Amino acid sequence: MVRLAAASLAGTAIEFYDFFVYGTAAALVLGPLFFPTFSALAGTLAAFGTFGIGFLARPLGSVVFGHIGDRYGRRPVMFASLTLTGLATVAVGCVPPYATIGVAAPALLLLLRFLQGLGLGGEWGGAVLLTAEHAPAHRRALWASFPQIGPSTGFLLANGVVLALSAALTDAEFRDWGWRVPFWGAGLLALTGLLLRTSLAETPQFREMGEPARLPVLEVARGHWRLVLLTAGALAIGYAVFYTVSTWSLAYATERLGVDRTVMLVCIMAAVAVMGVLTPFAALLGDRYGRRPLCLAGCAATVVWMFPMVALLATAEPLLMFAGFLGAMMAFILMFAVIAAYLPELYEPRVRCTGAAVGYNLGGVLGGALTPIVATALSRGEGTPWGVAGYLTGVGLLSLGCFALLPETRPAAVAEPGSGAEPEAAPA
Image (cartoon, rainbow, N blue to C red; front, top):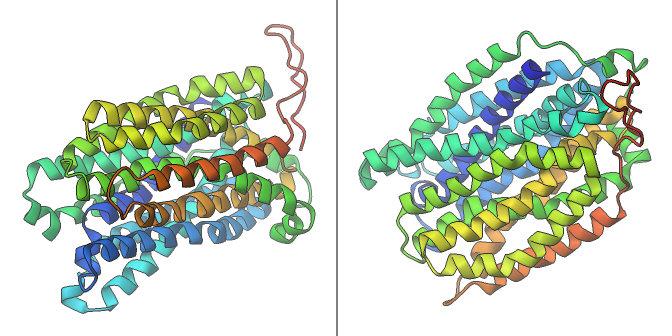
């Protein structure tokens, strides 16, 4: 389990590094480089639009790679998705700016961002199922939480590289070539991740499940469509909060509040680092008290915290901004630490890779793709951007209602340590 968890964590960290480094670049430099004929605000919106394309591709990736995972195994998904995302990310770093090749530059950016999202849409399902289906039932949330540390690790890695480059280079150098370096580094990271995954075994539940579904996506659409929609709506607030903190707030504070780029990156990274450390501890609570109670608590906390978070951001004081981000990330991880166990337990093994991944990535479309664009539009006026807080609160209430309609899936009977009894399997 340690080897499996480490390989899953490393892979998701690398893939989310690829995804997040684009978001950071979109907030800082892509607008003027690839959309120079737009105003500053319109350029930022256009850059965030290409950011959103990656989220739109993720459900399609979950269908394509989910089909592979449900018919041929979880293991092949982990290799194919990482290869695709790594190649697309390296290519982003090679795209010439608008000044060199004209409209072909933003067109290439859109295509490569789409391919990034396609690969990431498959990664989560493969990595999570590889750990969840190997894990003992009474510690499934704990072991399945390790891939969930991957996004935090990938974010810290991506922003750490950008932070180091920002400190070492002048603004002109960073805008000229420095922003490309994190994308080129994705190639080496992808190779490392592929090597870590070569020794992984297929999951016992896949090997024992019998005849696989012929077209998993059709079975999911016919028999589990309500479940997919509920999980997508439930997860929307987590994505919305995370990308408000990690992407929109970076652009807003540097452009509108005049906060130094390095200061903002440090505030955000510190909050995400604490979130990553707390992930397995929150997952242990999910093993003890259930998946649904933690999701409801985390969702309710985000609803309560959105207006204070925006107020703290508007102060432009580093410690207060960090406090606002930290509160949001702690509420976020109460939900997402157990999601890697919760979603697979909602589906039977023959359609699990497709169903869990589609619900997870549709939540990304609802919460992640739109939020930076909507938040940028809502924060155009002077003063504190209360519209952003109102929008996030509304998304949080929607997600709270969806979580309330989902069932609990934690195994009903757990063997006492040393009793020799087997824990009861989780319901499909």
